[in-house]
Amino acid sequence: MNTEVSREAILSEALELIEREALYAHRVNWPEVTSACWRLLVEHGDVSGLHSALRHALEALGDAHSFLRLPDADSVHRGLLGLYYVAGTVAVVFPESPAELAGLRPGDRILKVQGQPVGDGVNAGLSPEPYVHLEISQAGVVREVNLVRADVPVHHATPVGWRLRDDIGLVCLPECHLSGVFEDGETYQQKVRDVLHALSRAGVRRWVVDLRLNLGGNMWPMLSGIGPLAGEGDLGAFVREQERWPWRYEHGQASIGGDVLAQTAGDVLPSLSETVPVAVLTSALTASSGEIIALSFLGRPGTRVFGEATRGLTTSNSLYELADGSALLLTTAMDADRTGKIYDHGVQPDVVVVNDWHDFRTDRDPVVRAAIDWLELRSSSR
Image 1 (tube, rainbow, N blue to C red):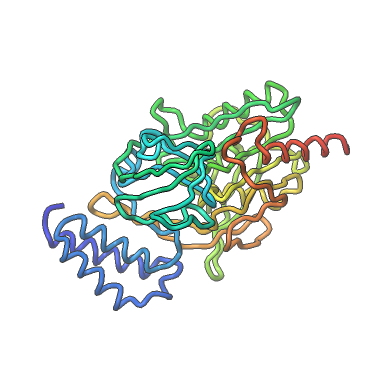
Image 2: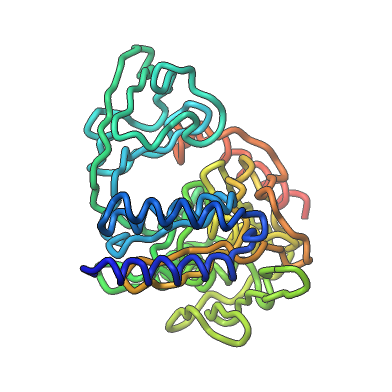
């Protein structure tokens, strides 16, 4: 894209699309926002101006979920610091990121961000500025860290699982990138299938589904893979005004409106009876499609949710590709569980257990231990 005309055409089309399709478009003062977008386009004079204008329009929606996806988003994180923290405790550090290179690790405490005490929530107080100053406590030692945003290669986490004890197995579902295909050519859903089969052969009959690091992405491979534990049929729905579009799992297929959007090849684990106990683990980082997977278990009699309230991005994003290779991910609908209940502020756990990120997925993990206690109680009460 080299000409001003092409940038103008893309912006004009995108603004029209956002105003027509976005769930909360009616809340926006479009004459004011449109004027600001055109100013940004002219001021920058290149593709960065277009992207700045598009981000401005998306931010005006106020849904905290719509975003601009750059053409290389599957391979590079642009302007990354490389950490997630919850109420000041570091939960995730991205490989090769400025945060990792500075020595940060899960369990560290962030005391101040840009000189201000850290607040509650996810990455509270973190600004989009290129330079960020942190005061942290690491193993009881307080030190200061300066981070500079950088472009960082994307590392796609793989679904994994292991037996916890007796017949209890843990399945960890990370976020799923847009293509759902890993570098080895295998799909996300096939890797989940392999985990389920391996655990089943090892004697697992009661299940823990860990969504605590599921930041979202493509829901369909996730649903296709984990569907045997969630059950057959309509497991939830996207809702907008009077319209409802159920998402469905059946025999390895994840579908909507009769269109199969992901399918697991080969034999899949038979779907569990609704009364078989399944513990679902959530955190404040569980977001977007991760929350949709959590919703897909709700309303199932044998399910209980442990951990923390999810991020609150329980809305559906639709992808609209633009001529420069980027794409708009627009919030277009609300999410509902299989009973029809709509979730507009995330998923609340049945049993609240604060995550200990220092002991995450160790024998001391309090959320996993609470889930195991419940599963063993369910077994002894039969």
